[in-house]
Length: 166
Image (cartoon, rainbow, N blue to C red; front, side, top):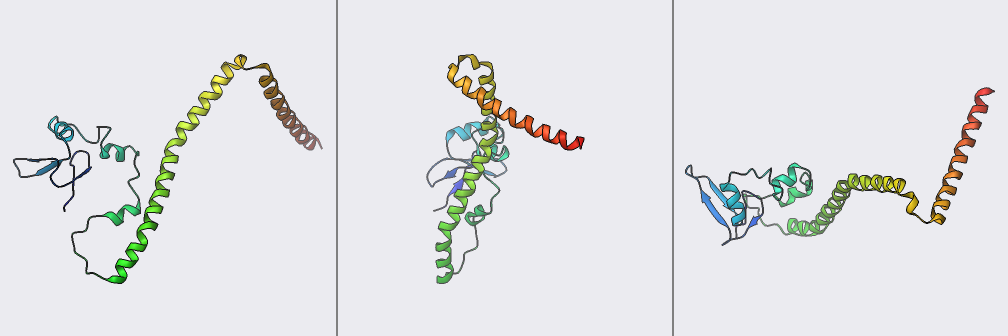
């Protein structure tokens, strides 16, 4: 069973599915669905269409450069059967999937860091603007906590000034 890749969106095409377009120069284009075929006929660039794999790779949305993908690479040369090699391969598969999963989680968390930072800045700005809407008890507790912080800073500065005078 030969699995092909869609020319436009890079998704897998199973046997009996999709559309095949042959250009005059005998170049074959395979499409997974009519959506991809229509976009190709409209001469759209897959790197500029947001839902394609090419766009996601180009803009850093997907984890593309990883050594674990090397194991799934298509190999055209048949390998001679070896029991030991097969056993080692089967033992390595869960380890590789675990490594890939961990790297994917790290990639996703790194992608979300700027958004979380912007959200925190927006929340702190909103809190500064609308501080009067909070109950008085909360405001007094916050101010008391800030005053203790300020006192600590002042004490540290005075000790540094005394050291400079001596």
